[in-house]
Amino acid sequence: MSPAYSAGISELDEVLVKASRDNSTESETKRSVAVITRQQLDEQQPDSVAQALKYQPNIEVGGGPRTSNQQPVVRGLSGNQVLQLVDGARQNFNSGHRGAYQIDPELLEQIDVIKGPASSLWGSGAIGGVVSQTTRDAQDLLAPEQGFGAYVKQGHATVSDQNKTSGAIYGRLGEQVDLLINGYYSDQNNIRLGNGQSLSDSSERTSGGMIKVGWQLDEDQRLTLSQRRHEIDGTVPGNPAKEATGNPVVDRDSISDHTTLNYQLDPDSDWLDLDATLYYNRTNVDEYRVKQNERDNIKYRSEGFSVVNRSQLANIDWVYGADGFRDKSQGTREGSNRPTPADGRTQVVGSFVKVDLPLAENWTLTPGLRYDHFKTEAKNLEDSKRTEDAWSKSLALSWQANDWLELVARYDEAFRAPTSEELYTTGTHFGPNTFVPAPDLKPEKAKNKELIARMSFEDFLTSNDRLRVNASLFKNDITDYIAQITYNYIPIPGSKDQLPLNTTYVNLGKAEIKGGEIAASYRVQDLDVGLSYGRMIS
Image (cartoon, rainbow, N blue to C red; front, side, top):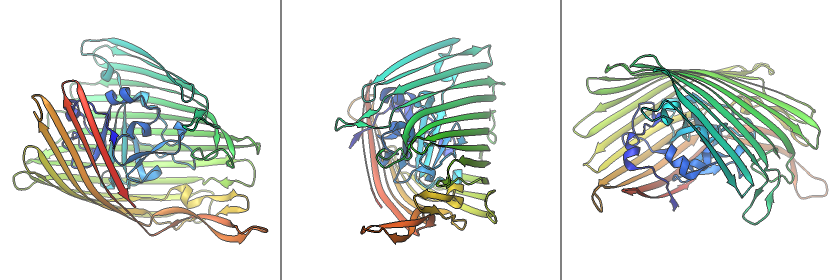
């Protein structure tokens, strides 16, 4: 068991689960979710998004002890099998052994997670779940009558002699405009491990910030523009999740810039509640292989849009919309004994609909359907173009048995299109081993069955207290699972070992992940107590 840090129960009822796309609260959504509020982030003081989620059942910290490489593992899946969002914008960068979560928790107001497949809402990538991060804005920090504010934080961690400074200024510019300027800087030495030894090549410098402007056009409309940067500079193993021994040391400087424009329209209307988002993400990674005296550069560009509307017609709740993105990746490398990055292009467009249908009293049926069309190619390889389509379905049946118990049975499908790296990588992997492209890879597919029980008791032990218990059982069947393999082995002279001459990506067939989880939280006055437990078999 592990402690589950919990904001007040009454506060959780008001928190919207952004990843659900339907503006439902945590207690209203029909999915297994986890929500981390700003209060919880302040209590935990995590250095990474993965650390902020580690107390949730069946969510672990992956990527090793170096925080810049950490990522959440949701029900046994991670990386590009778990969709990452910031303010509704997809974060698609995922290259080799380089960190994909390019944001400091200091900038976040909330993190919410859908656990389990969710492609019927979000399309490709949501096989393991969705991690949605919402950045802070001036309205989150200002009191109702406050016009201006600022804060400065200073922290120190003895485990790595880390010094971290963060701060913000924020305020209202007239009656309609608000502004937030937020920044952070962290410098740490090598991490000291539990055995007293030092983790070599784990020192790093991290810096970044965000400028966010909100414009309340009128009572019903709001426009928000944010510009965010995150920079990491450090000397790390080529695979930061591993020890430096036998792992080439790389001086890595990673800079990511993110621009997001969001428009909200919410008039007094049953059929119109609109969110529209445009975004552009740019990541540039410069690497210097110290021993080999070789320099590499990787560039990744992603631009996309999202339009979602929520309507209520004849007591039926509708959520529908469309989104799409276009990714471009390219790289240059010195030396001939290196993997050759794909000059890849990926384009995906999809549309979806979800409906809440009231049946008999206290029964609700929620079907969902999404269609995606995607195409990809590598400019540096001939005959690499491919185009595919995918349908993703979901169905949930919920029963409000009484005032304190709700039961949900649901079925969800998901898929993940292969990345350019998996499809088109060529060149040397290590020694005599070379990459072989895999242009015929099939998308991964998932089918998840789940039972959910939610219980809520007020005045449980005394007046004005509350106990909440959430439990679920699930079984996620994955087909055409994509994995990297080595093959074409030859004997090593004078040794019993063998050396693989080739590396490629293949569809392995089937994988099954099943398990269960339970989380309980109790609040009375200013005391919060929580426990959670999760178990999986794969």
